Length: 108
Image (cartoon, rainbow, N blue to C red; front, side):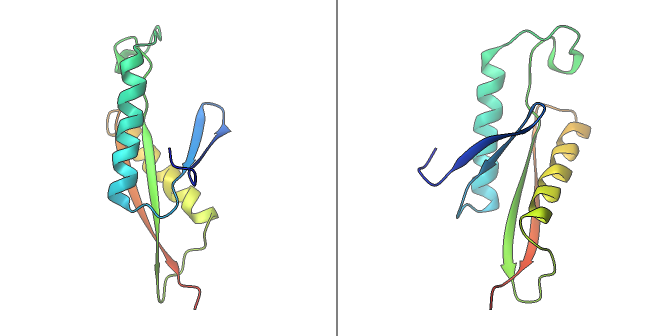
């Protein structure tokens, strides 16, 4: 992690990672590293068929892109976009990363 990055428990078993000045590809790369690190731990999770009995991580990564004419407000919409990407990852088979792009208004 960089000095500017922040990680916090968001609720239940959800964590939020804030990566300032990181584009979608960079966020997806970091999310994939996190997913692989969790998988490599091979923590037992009985009854978790999707993970073959081990803990896995489904990760939703969202990036805000400032554009003239953007209509979404940040940060509430960014959280919603990340949550939508998370459920996309879960519905896609779990233990994967999915991304979302949010177009937000510029501060001009």
